[in-house]
Image (cartoon, rainbow, N blue to C red):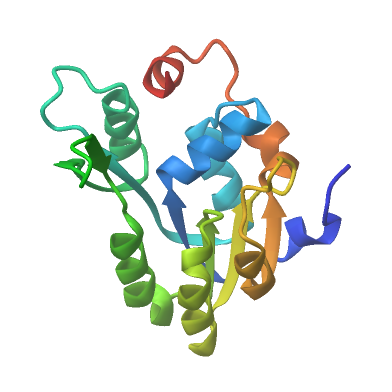
Length: 194
């Protein structure tokens, strides 16, 4: 049963929209819900809602690996309507001598949102990261509406409560699943997502 039936209809056909996808966050939410996202279907759903200006996808990549499992997906997205924003994963040693990796894309996403906020009417943010609450608030002060897509259908919920409260609209990814679920026959995206 949908969480907010009316929320899926809070788009206007003539409004300009920009989409910002926190790749790791969306991947984690979809996996937890038990499906893989078909990014072709996702882009079709988005373009049916309004006039898409740009769809950004953010992810960190391991540059020194011979084969990166996310590289085929990044390449496919780059050729099929998404603007890719990537950076190398940084490796470091913590104070206990353990090797760690860091690949946070929050700053890149926030800068792009602020740069486009004056040029669009509506932003869709695919992330549940509570760190984006202040970003959403800043964009709303510019008069731009913000829809956040994540999920509360997991334990614990994948969306931070403060982000959900700040958003103008919330769409649960579980409610979009049937529209954007990747079918098993799509070899390119299946290989890329694994």
